[in-house]
Image (cartoon, rainbow, N blue to C red):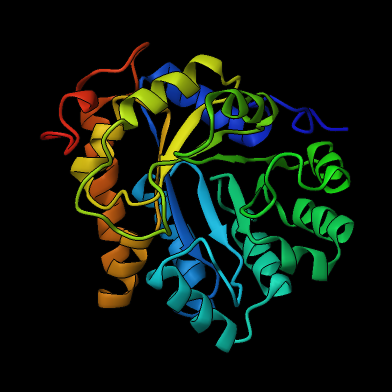
Length: 290
């Protein structure tokens, strides 16, 4: 079993990246992109460009026909990628091509069905061989499938766990204890998608999770602007941006998406990383000027 295959750890490439950022006093920029959107060649350019723009960890979405947790933006991206024939095999090839020269840890972001159709053990081995660092299975909640969890927790990929805004405190602590790589806090109820404001109470949820988690805490869902990203970075170890990035790509192409990534990185760096306790976000849910 690899060092990363231990519950409640931030080891391996993801852990190393977060430790470096902590030492530098910076929060992680974690962009999400859908593999194969707007087309497979563009995804290759995106992965390389995101690293150059300052991404620290990249979430690469596996296209799925029924992405129930995702809003219209990611739904359209998934349908476009599926129409281009992008399945699990193609996603792993993209990871392998990027990993030959890229240095950002890649977290495969997937619903469980494509993984099970591919074969769970085969997927884990092929993802490891391709160079992936982690897996986030959106519809595998803690305790739902003990056999699958046992395999994934001992696999050479960090199993990133999700905590929802509605998760009771005791269960959130259980999830935090089993998270690997980092813990993904969903900032709001509902599906993914860009939002104009951060939700009230987010600061308290981040503070509570960081107090019990053995791994860094990254926040996603609805973070749309550099101002919002900077507000979250004052409190959390990482900021995940997906739909806003894909919206930019849909409107203006890869270069437009990368321009947003540059803006996000600059905003995070202006505020630095999280302190030992919550600060400005509690008083200013819009985040204030970065």
